[in-house]
Length: 567
Ligand SMILES: Nc1nc2c(c(=O)[nH]1)N[C@H]1C(S)=C(S)[C@@H](COP(=O)(O)OP(=O)(O)OC[C@H]3O[C@@H](n4cnc5c(=O)[nH]c(N)nc54)[C@H](O)[C@@H]3O)O[C@H]1N2
Ligand SMILES: Nc1nc2c(c(=O)[nH]1)N[C@H]1C(S)=C(S)[C@@H](COP(=O)(O)OP(=O)(O)OC[C@H]3O[C@@H](n4cnc5c(=O)[nH]c(N)nc54)[C@H](O)[C@@H]3O)O[C@H]1N2
Ligand code: SF4
Ligand SMILES: [Mo]
Image 1 (cartoon, rainbow, N blue to C red):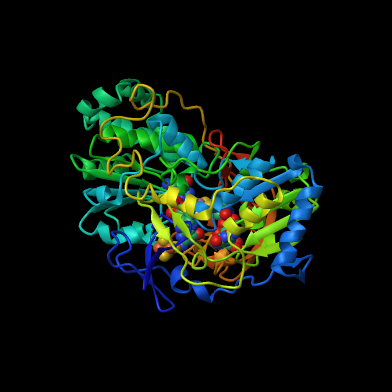
Image 2 (cartoon, rainbow, N blue to C red):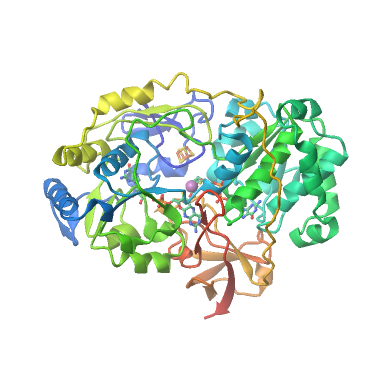
């Protein structure tokens, strides 16, 4: 019996007991409470890549590493790109950055995930720490704002018992059904709702003046900014009523409140501004309240790996600038936005290397495929964006399949005379943070912020208009069955029956970037100005745009509106 942790990209970062070949939830861990989700309950049943291949021909691992070294040697370093996703959240995944950066290759910046929201948080607070789950458990009211806990954050659910729940989401999610109050907001409208909630709560005198005077003294200027919004017209535009605002204020008055903000609100070019406005609302509520977005999982843990490298934004890479692209822990041909552009751009690359666990669109495009080891077959340690702890992931058994990230980086480093410390030195360095990650506290902003003067910086202008084109909003969020493009991927488009399509009917969805045909499934929980296609659905990103967020170099998966054509 041995302890490890789930490696997946997930708020919960579950602690696991590996017992005689079975993965079980750790009953002693604060969040895990003895339960794992279906992804981990069936983890070892998913068919993985077992052998390396070059141009679809099976080769040995030695041959694969030989090919890789030869290709790297034959290509100028400024024509090599290293792409890394979060298929595995272990900190040792970053060891390959060390090799590629030291070698002079290009790395990436920005994110496909939370970069816009994080930019908004950083502008306000100067850092992106989390209130701990233990701290959230003390709240009387929890607001889920663009976050879907039954799907993406299920280990928070037990702690909701007895609390008042408010949900703000364009979709009537399971948590919305259970909530004390639900606002089925129009997509992309959150910035305005946050501003109006802030304005009315200040009119009601509900702000925590003592806290604000000390740590957010520009709140009156923020109130003035909120007055620049025309109430009636804006409420109509965002499909929210004055009654909705009044009811939310009634439910939160005098209470201890946590606002759990998810990805939904920031999948737009103006994602940073939306999160910044919601964060300001949380700050006005005062000392014992606050917003948790996805925390920076490595805040307070300096990387031991060499990181200095030219960097390109992950969301809109021009692949034609490279002759070798090394893809690790990621499926960019499905998960990057604007798949048609990505496919065309990457078709010019001479050597695409895929280093991962599963066959997918990216392994299909790759020239060289190198199987990775699973988290049970290598040593690692993980941090999390939903909790403050670090969890060790020691190797559980030896396997002949695949190669670890450390071993791959070591072989490359030896071949190119690059210095690399031993695996145990890196692991020990990360483990030294286990007991006390610098700066991480249960309530990190109780005594001020991490800006130059310790004060919260409010947004001081609002210059984004709502996109009022008559086309439909595309909602593309997480599915319970898959982890983005891993495991059981969805294959339908979901619509409200009132839109007039038939169950099972094939429709063509068109955006300014591409088109996709899918069969219809009804979902009565959707608004009739939206269609929903889950993340991981093959082809969904043919509809999305390469335009990045205004701040944070983030993909903007819901910026494009769509039209439907009957096939
Ligand atoms: N089962 C499962 N779990 C996962 C993942 C997975 O693929 N599957 N992925 C993991 C990853 S990588 C991440 S980053 C997290 C993210 O997990 P979440 O933060 O929960 O993100 P999403 O599911 O993308 O979106 C959350 C909610 O935002 C709503 N939403 C969409 N547009 C808007 C909007 O304009 N305004 C508002 N207010 N809400 C909106 C959606 O309807 C959805 O209910 O989940 C992680 N956990
Ligand atoms: N339309 C739309 N697109 C989206 C999103 C959306 O909501 N809608 N969400 C975005 C978000 S938030 C994210 S985070 C991205 C995620 O997108 P990706 O980063 O591409 O993540 P996955 O699809 O989970 O693919 C991860 C890959 O990692 C590999 N892998 C797993 N474990 C290991 C390991 O230990 N080592 C190595 N080397 N490889 C491993 C697996 O083979 C898998 O193919 O997608 C983004 N794309
Ligand atoms: S809930 Fe998240 S962390 Fe827990 S087992 Fe599932 S994927 Fe892993
Ligand atoms: Mo993500």
